[in-house]
Length: 319
Ligand SMILES: CCCCCCC/C=C/C(=O)SCCNC(=O)CCNC(=O)[C@H](O)C(C)(C)COP(=O)(O)OP(=O)(O)OC[C@H]1O[C@@H](n2cnc3c(N)ncnc32)[C@H](O)[C@@H]1OP(=O)(O)O
Ligand SMILES: NC(=O)C1=CN([C@@H]2O[C@H](COP(=O)(O)OP(=O)(O)OC[C@H]3O[C@@H](n4cnc5c(N)ncnc54)[C@H](OP(=O)(O)O)[C@@H]3O)[C@@H](O)[C@H]2O)C=CC1
Image (spheres, rainbow, N blue to C red):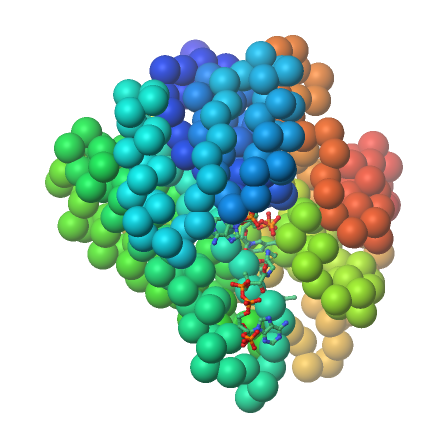
């Protein structure tokens, strides 16, 4: 039997408890669904309870196990408390997915010290708070897997210098923790760096930015944006025994966009504006019985229209 048939079956994470921060929306919601579909008791945590309850309801209706907790990752005491509550209630914490994060767009010269600190505090300090709480509260003694969602940091990120700096910091923190924590009962810790992903996150962008994104989606070696499921699949892989010798890496899920520096003669000469030839992965639900999956993606309408077209790739040669 192939390794993938034996590993990616629906009880892959059966008996495991995995915390997904920011699991009430977007990529986090999709990760929660995919992990629940693979047998996990998934705990989703964020600042707003309503989206968490909605996702819990979605997962439970599909037969999965999901718990919710209020959490602000910027609050170290709250991070500690949430881990303690999970261990008290569920008896263990096998995995942590640091998905919560974000930023606002601003040119560096207009960024205030407070604005810079806010984004660094949310992403870098927040991720540290969660990793430390998970280590102290369970994993230091029992082991576990940690995956953190970052962003493309191979090059600079104009208008998002604060998040670029914070995410690059997380990637290096991950390398150090992989070395320091590996020997403690088998902790593995890795990052996933999504490129532009069709998700609720894009609702935070200004309308002009959304228009720009809707028109430039082909500027990628795959001629399209990524899906929440494509990020979730990478997370599930890194959490799974199939990745048991992968430690301290940053896995880019970006269609190869981070490899390119643009083309001074025009992007049309490098990328294909005609349409993508790369079928999308939209979740394990399609055509498979008894597993979960995301049917509705809460992205801006113009971006969701792209997703609808992407789903036809492979069925017709152009989008
Ligand atoms: C197209 C390329 C983009 C590449 C980026 C990498 C790819 C990543 C994509 C994504 O991440 S998708 C989106 C994910 N979700 C989000 O980003 C969430 C949206 N953002 C927020 O909720 C907030 O901006 C925040 C970052 C979480 C901060 O919220 P918080 O409530 O903690 O802070 P505030 O009190 O609102 O602000 C504190 C401080 O920060 C400065 N500031 C805030 N907003 C702006 C802004 N729009 N422009 C400039 N500066 C801003 C400001 O100094 C604030 O202090 P005060 O002036 O209000 O005292
Ligand atoms: N979409 C994309 O193209 C890309 C996204 N990313 C990253 O992927 C992750 C998910 O993004 P996406 O799903 O698109 O966007 P969303 O804005 O939908 O997700 C962000 C989530 O983080 C939670 N969150 C924010 N701040 C905190 C906090 N202080 N404590 C706890 N939870 C918090 C939010 O919930 P609540 O407000 O209830 O707390 C929300 O559920 C983010 O880290 C994002 O930066 C990276 C690269 C590209």
